[in-house]
Length: 102
Image (cartoon, rainbow, N blue to C red):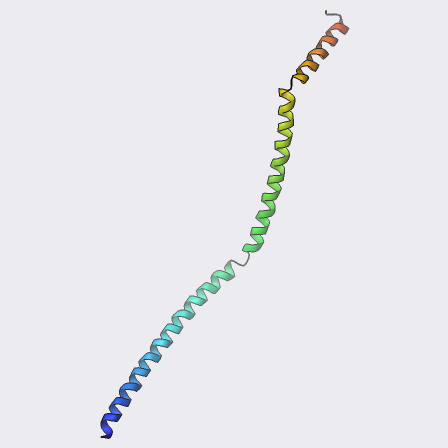
């Protein structure tokens, strides 16, 4: 009667041994994946500084664009304004009167 008990124990030990090998294999696979992720994270360590630098550059470019748009809109207003045309005409007329051409 001791032999069936030994066979059952041997089978259980073999099954346990197989499960342990599977666990070790899974652990090694996870370790490899974690190592690959760690390398990618280390490679991306400079990203926050680069993002901050690009943010500063975009802010500076936006400020420059706003200045240009403001200057262009003021210049456009001057060119479209009839007041400037009247003043220019009056100035040319005065110049012509002073030179004696009229």
